[in-house]
Length: 227
Image 1 (cartoon, helix red, strand yellow):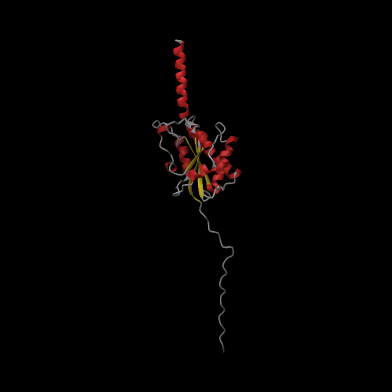
Image 2 (cartoon, rainbow, N blue to C red):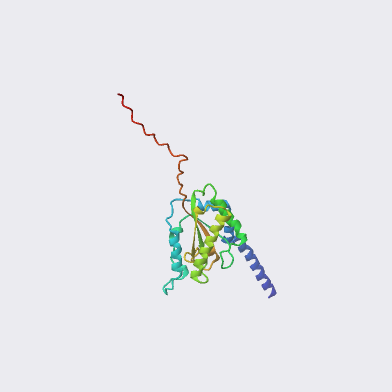
């Protein structure tokens, strides 16, 4: 009996040794956090055409939908995306950690935000504008999640502008709450808390005015008549 038990334990250990090497070395969140500047550039440097996104209108739409009390409202995993145009745009998903239920970025995530800033000022991304998109997992009150995701997107924008000196004209922010989950099949998964950096358009270059106005031609005096 004891021999059979020991043999069974040995077989389980051997099976575990065979299975473990096939498991992934690190979860997707950890891989995202360790992304380099060049990884971020590679994700974003695929501009094709400008996206026509009315950001203030989208913010209002998110709030209105999050306040829905309809009995026919589908569950989070079956809701249609509120901004489907964003799905096909070049994007980098950043695993930025916040203090619980606040827009306060934890110190360990400033390095990730710094790498994003380094990417945005690189020559290949300098000519473009970006949208910072906040998401959140489907827990708690739906409207509160929409508001918190907006505050977190605003916080990332503020850090990029005020700490890392990225031009404010190149950055907009919107929070989608749980209205467009990154992993709809698993509404409560941590991946749904990631922040997206989305390339949306080219920077419009304004023509510089001439340094000195062109001189106007002097009016010719009428010739005097000879008498």
